[in-house]
Length: 399
Image (tube, rainbow, N blue to C red; front, side, top):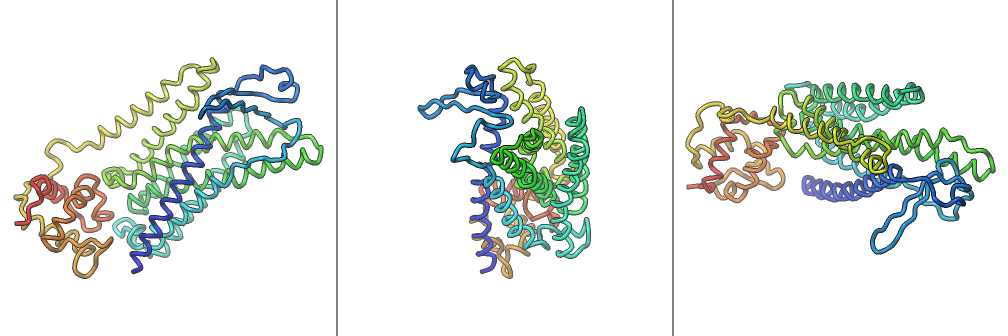
């Protein structure tokens, strides 16, 4: 019953997390587009009021005219919308999902004794520390170097080194699947913390200054913009880290931390292309196609690197793909979690009928995606995966 209830909690939290993430990322991408597409106001009255940019757009049958005041508007409107619950809800639902799936089952998902022989409690403590420590170090880098001339380049280089170090450590201490997710979660935590500790407090200080009739310090807008830009470059790497947990050929590679670093770098490069292409249309910068090409080239290079060598996937002769040979593999590699004593996810594979029923799932998860056995805890070989693949392609015979 506990497994059943956890499955429901995982389903509902995952659903909520995806919905809130869509709302947060969508609004973030929109405002990056908006900032990159604004042009100086044509109306003298708007310029006199302190407006620094405007955009005319058409959507859903109507015309929209957003106007930006970089420091302060001429007067505060009675209704002011704040963009923060999207970020907070995404982090809260994500951490709740991380707790239900990974922290609650730490002995299964966070502990690989071939890497580190520690207790589930220690693994949980280190995993949570990853989220906190990355934010502390990242925030310190921004505060120490972000205000300097050429500070953005220094911050970018140091944060890149920090992410690389975190990828290496996570893959040394945790199973690959958990390591990839943990790196994504720590970056997502920094994104939410940027909103909570810098962007929203800065906006509140501006509001209080306007209400008190005091001069507005433009540093608050500058800091908020800086952290918002960081968030947009984190987005695609974070999404890759979370989605990659469904693809065992990525996180099970012997140099999985390098795979993670390269793919996250590719995501940031592609994001740079989308950020700059709006400015290119207005003649503000050169065509950013080079960034997209770099991102695509890195992805193609990783795909080429990870591709199995011809004839290497079987690692030896493969026995005839009969139910007898396949059943022996299932009994040795899968029955501990899907047998008479335990049926994880309500899946049982220790009989011909049950194996036939779940043949497609076995093929997808053990052969195609290589996500099972979980963390390859029973050391299924490439030859055994090839055997399962041949058996499925023959129609999964059980006679």
